[in-house]
Amino acid sequence: MGLKDKLFLALLSALIVGCSSTATSPVAQQETVDESQPMVVSEEAAEPSDFDADGVTPIDDRGMAITRTFYFDYDEAILGPEALSGLEVHAEILKRNPDKSVVVEGHCDERGTREYNLALGERRASAVVAFLESSGVRSGQIDMVSYGEERPADPGHDSAAWEKNRRAILNYR
Image 1 (cartoon, rainbow, N blue to C red):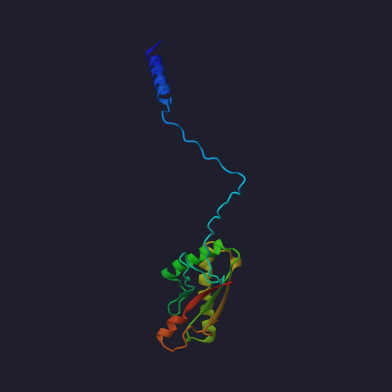
Image 2: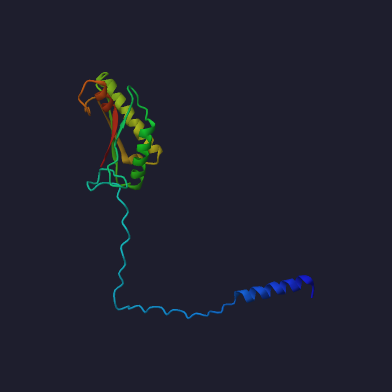
């Protein structure tokens, strides 16, 4: 028998001795189960809802309403970083809830002609729609409309009112 064979046998013996068990404490007996009583299975925790009790107000995990209004700079239809992060939340909600849909409303302040403001409101709504679709929301879940200057959030005629009126709104249904 060569050296390799002796080493192999020594390792094999050590392995066998090391794996043997010698229990010194008694094994606890398992409790008997009374099968005559119906087993109560606790209901799993329901998935947290993305919507308030009204079914159309999106909420966060604390139950607080999520903003559905996104603002634009003067004469612009470009979404800023804050709007993009808010819209990401809405995109996730819409992807988790394929039975829900939104209408994206585009709005403007009172400056500009009626026709120009309708077109600008449409570009603003389109920017929101494009972002949602690029985030994986199905196009069938999204409609859009432009109201131009016709539905102001603030009826004032100053820069503070105009800032509030340059917006896009998501309305769930």
